[in-house]
Image 1 (cartoon, one colour):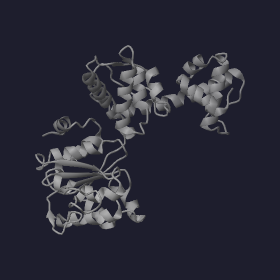
Image 2 (spheres, helix red, strand yellow; image 1 turned 30 degrees about the vertical axis):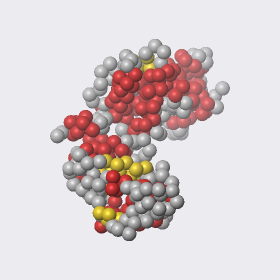
Image 3 (cartoon, one colour; image 1 turned 30 degrees about the horizontal axis):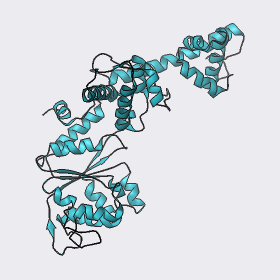
Image 4 (tube, helix red, strand yellow; image 1 turned 45 degrees about the vertical axis):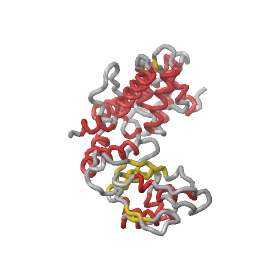
Length: 367
């Protein structure tokens, strides 16, 4: 099975080198029973990779049981994991299997493992080492065959140093470590994800696939996505629901991305109408060229405008050096003067977005 076939089978969306490298590692380790520790911010898709590991393993026909260790109260987590005997505690009216027994022969995915209490960590370590445990209130040992995949958005080494996580359990879990990068570090994956989510939403709601304008698409690519893929999915679904004309445009997105700022390079190459086939190295190189071009144009504009207006701006060969911020401020003022303070015309003259100009005016205190 190729990497692309693997991604398609297990629903892994993305064409970046980071994702392809992760998939390559997953395909190598999935067939073994080795423990896997998955790092990544909230919303990056840690469970998707856990499901892919299980689905490609020799345990694929057995259960995959997912447990969010942070969502279960400390007092009952042990009972949920290991089960209990009838009468073991108040409310234990029947014998109950825990997640380890339910996952016997398969895989147990322990999400947010850093939230597990230290007392439970001790028992988890014992199960990993001996494959044996006792239900709460039981006097007999239960033996299971379970593969462990753990995930966290915290640095477990720091948790160990702070005495909040057992070092021996950490060493036992991190046999193979996968780190899923946040979406802002792999922007070339955003177009594929956008197309996937918009098509998925249309299919599930029996509507035509909404069209996304170029401006809206550029916003999606440029946004930092602190909530990662989960936030992107929710945004696309909300935008599609709010769209009255079957078009997702910049206006709809701005109501959903209230903290949107154009902090990343503009004019990133975006393929519309069909799924992009190569938005990796070309995207980065194009963005860098645009940045350099903008800086050169701002410099030249500052020197030219100063010569015409009488404002002293040092040329590159003069003895005194001005900072880039000073040059930029001079260029903006001269552009405003030249356009009689028509901000839209000034932004066009400066070859920057009107929104960026307004932000710069506020930054430099230009009224």
